[in-house]
Structure formats: structure tokens, C-alpha cells
Image (cartoon, rainbow, N blue to C red; front, side):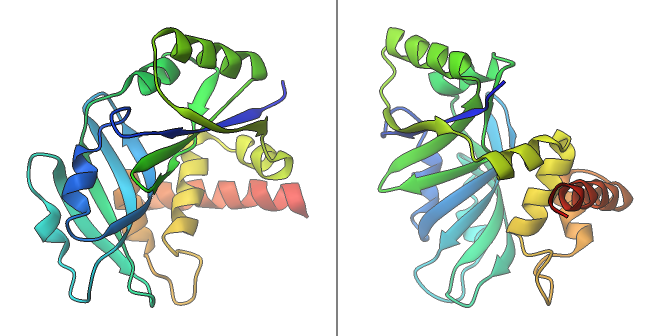
Length: 215
């Protein structure tokens, strides 16, 4: 089955932007890497550019939309990476995708000028059916791209189990492979919700599969 990628941009009103309003009081949101998602809450690693130094993540917690905010790292350009737990309302697009076994969200979401950019992977038939269903219920979105998924990268990632893939993506995203490390294995395991030896095993197996695919 050929894997395709549908990239769409959701305008305000088509996704729950309440948490964005809470977070952007303290800076610009650049991207979200979703770790867990259900009908009520999202746990995500969020890239944020605060307006100045001395950012205190505890000031973001309002108990209404931002339930948790933990600072993970700071970059030299002034940006910060935080672990956040956010309350939200599930929009129709997520319900349409989550009830299908042949479609999946890319965990990396982008926020651009108030719009949420979402990437969905699946078969040509599955994505075309999603487009028809979204049109039928009057869901407003802008299709940015509908193309073949990147062959090399997608094929390698698809060879991993979901937990291996998530561990590897998160480790790379948070700077685990940088020198010096920006995140330690213990923190990585905590974010993933697994024991430290389990996180290490996920990474070891994922690294081996990736290396076997390219060497």
C-alpha cells in the first residue's frame, strides 16, 4: 500500500484554541509534539518563544486550559521547550481520524498565524474518504498538500513499533543525542510514562532498526 500524506490548515473555530490564548499571553507558540491525546486532554512538548528572559512555566498553569507546564530546556536563541498538559474540546477532524484504523496523525503540529497545521498519513483511498466526510459535515479547512509521503523517512519510521517511534522522535526533539545532552534518559522515560530501562530498550531497538535500514 502506498503511503500518502495530507497536510491541512485549520482556521480558528475548527480547533480548540482556548489553550493557545492562555499560552500566548507568555510568548509565541512555534510547534507542538503531541504525546497523548484523548477527547478531553492533550499532553504535548511545546516550543515557545517567551517575550524575555526569566520565563517561569508555572505562570502558564491556569487550571482551566493549561493543567501542567514543566520547563524541559532553553535554547541559545531565547526559546524554551516545555511539557504541557492541556484541556481541550475534540474537533470533528480528530473524531473522523481517530475512528479509522487506516489513518494516523503525525504527532508534530504547527501553529502559524492562528491556524493549526496538521499532517495525516494513510492510503490514497482512506485520505480521499476523509476529505469527502469532512466536506459532507461542513468542516472548514484548507488543504495545503496531498502527496506521497517521503519514501525513505516514512519507510524507516514505519518499520518501528509506535512506542519505538515515539521514543526516538522525542529523544531527537528534546536533544538527547546532542552533546551535552539537553535531556537525560530519566526525564525522557518520565515523559513517555515508562521505566528508565524500558525507555532505553525502546531507543536501542529503534536505533538498530534505523541503522540497519541505512547502512
